[in-house]
Length: 208
Length: 252
Image 1 (cartoon, chains in turn cyan, brown):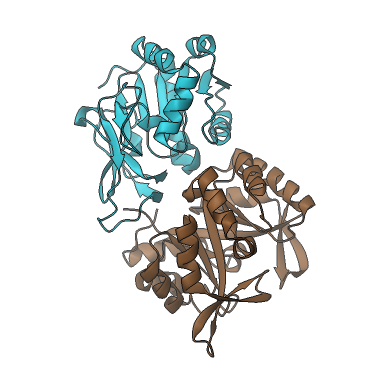
Image 2 (cartoon, one colour):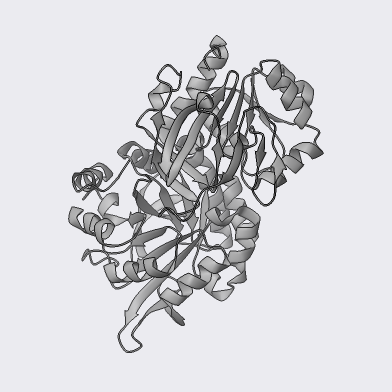
C-alpha cells in the first residue's frame, strides 16, 4: 500500500489512476498512523509552494513527513511535491520546505529564449548511469512548472534542458523527486513509477 | 529542449467520438477510450476532446468520458466545448482533464479566464480562438459559436488580452484554412507569435506531411492540432514525426 498525502493540493486522482493501472494499491490520507504504516509515501502537488506548505502545516504533517523520511520510509515527491522536499523556495517570498533534500527552489529564467512555464515534453539525460532510473535516459516526459531546483550534483539523477539545466529526477537515499508528471508521460512515465515501486519492494535505496 | 507537440482533436457527442460534416450528419466513429489509447500508442503528445453537443446533459457525460479515458490513457487531456463557468471547469479537471479550453464563453465573459486561472493556475486555461481574415477590415476577425457568430474582436489584440487575463495557452483555428487541407495559416501564427509568449497551438488546414514541417519551421508555434488527417488514417502521428525529425524539428 502506497499512501498519497492528502493535503488538498490539486488533482491526486490522475496519480491514483496511474498506480491503479500498475496494480499498486493506494490510499489518500493525511493520518500520521496510516502514513507510517504505508510501504511508501507519495507527495503530489499542484499550485504554489507557500500554499502547499501552509496546507501541510495546517495538518501538522511537516514533522510527520520529516520523521518518516529520516526513518528510511521511501518517499516520492511529484512536480510541486518534489520541490517541497528541498530546503526552501523563493516563490512569492522566501518559504521553508521540508528540508529532506539539500537545495533550494527558484524561478525558471524567462530571458533565455524559452517559454515559462515549461509546458510540454522534454528529453531527459540521466546523470547517474547506475541509478535504477537509468532507463529514463533520452526519453521524453511531460512537464508543467515555472520553478526548478538548484541542488548538489550528487542528488541529481536526471536533467532536462530548458534555458537552464533543470533537475528532472532527484534522489537522496529513500527520498526521490520527479519534476515531471509521470502520470501524464505515457509508457515512459508509468515505467518510472514502476521503477520506484520495484525500489520499494527491493529496499533498493542504497545508491546516492 | 521542448518537443513540438502533435495533437489529434476528437469530436464527442453522447459520450462517443463522432464524425460530422458541418456539425450535422454525425456518424459514430468509436469508443473514446479505445481511440485515445490508439493515439497514445501512435505517439500523440496530447489529446483534445471537443464536446460538440455541449448541453448540460452532455457536459455530465463528458466528465464521465474524461474519467474513463484518464484511467487508461496517460497523457495530457484538454477538454473544450460548452464550458461556461468555473464549476464546469472544476468538474472536468476533477474528472481527469489537465486543461480546459474556452472559446465563446471567454468572449462573452472575459472575467471567466481570470477566475479559472486564479483557481486552477494559468497552465490549466486554454483559450480557443476561431479567426478568419477580414480583407475589408484588414484584420483577423474572431468568431464564436462554432464559427457562426462574428465579433468585433481583432484576433491578435484578443490574444494579447486573454493572455493578460491569465490564459496559459492559445489554441488558434484558422477558419479560412479549416477543412481545406491547404496548409496552416502561417501569417496568423507569425503575427500571434510577435505579441504573446504563451504556447500557441495551430489548427486548421493540415493536409499533408509538408504542412506540418512548414508550420513548425516558419511560425513560432508549439503544437499542431489536426482532426481528419489523423482520424481517418490519411497520416499517422508516426509519419508526421518522422517527417519533422528529418527536417530537424524536435519531436518526441
